[in-house]
Image 1 (cartoon, rainbow, N blue to C red):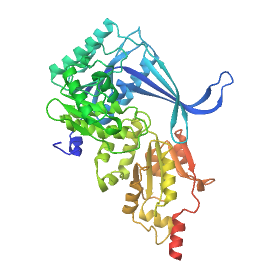
Image 2 (spheres, rainbow, N blue to C red):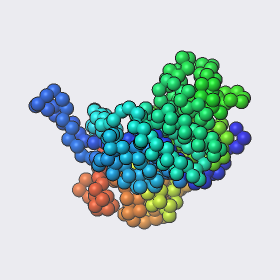
Image 3 (spheres, one colour):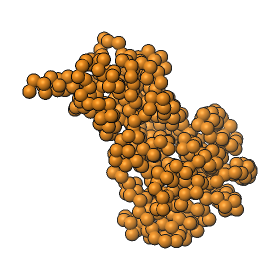
Image 4 (tube, rainbow, N blue to C red):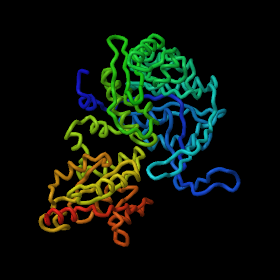
Length: 488
């Protein structure tokens, strides 16, 4: 690789990228299961929260928009309420959607029923409403016209094929030819076993199983990944193939030169949903900005590693990629957010549909009680923001001689915890103003606040959020440690 990935990330501007593919509206109904139905031996889900998101090609488009691309999206919807919701969600995500209406089809909607558990949500049922099969000839013609309009000024095309019938052979051929004529890269997230459909694309990104079906080669190690990649190059006339290998990372097979294995950093994998969308999004963004195939693939590998650490499809920001790229103390420092930037940071997380959790404290001498408390706080959402009292604030609250650890040390130790995503310092005696900047979905304090005023409660609950009092762990406190040390 000729350049550090941090430098490659810094070259990403706001390229116009076109996404073409299957549109799906993802609905999530989340609640609790407390009993079995008297009508049949099935669980009764009491719904507490409903959410809608862009799925399939729409998910790719939203990921690109969150990364900063000027995103165009072309697909097919029905003449129904689902189509209206699709347009509203695309507009809110900053995606310019041109959806061709096919009255003979219904807008694809996937409804997932989720039961809330201690640390995550478990899917108990999925209901699919969709029309399968190729679109009609008239719809296909309108789609091609829409692609011709939308591709103007684009620097890359991403084809998101979920096999719903929108990407007919004729449409694929025309889209690929348009991209080649304009000299821009075209990346395909493929479906099925016949990859000759994508002949002339710049790159395809099959996973291990898809590559195996298409080539007949069992992808079990790097040698077989290289062999499968070579077959894919010939099948589809590609410049390079990128085979994703789940926990083993990715394998890049270029037309010229040796194949390259891009390993992942071992992380806890919560959910692989959306990892493939993340790969093609970053790949398209980086190639549009002029990155080489190896640079683009390496950046996509980092982003996919971040994606699987979240439950569900969660768009990843450039800031998160930059933080992951940072090494050593720089990586820890990336978690420290300036007070002036925290509102904008929180807004970016909300735009990516992440659930924000906030807690605060002095965290002077970090001990096991703190670690367990912060882990529990993080379990209530996707992003944990910790408000940290400044040195002057700690002294006012705790008295002379405190804090024992200076602010820089407390920031570094907190940042080293996996549960903590961001640390922001506040000078006041209470975090109320900071809560007003973050506007979290969940505010966490210890159970010692039972019956006491929780600063920021009105702000959080006034927005429909929750205040949670987390368990404390007897015998573990900074004051107790200090007293024992002084008495020794």
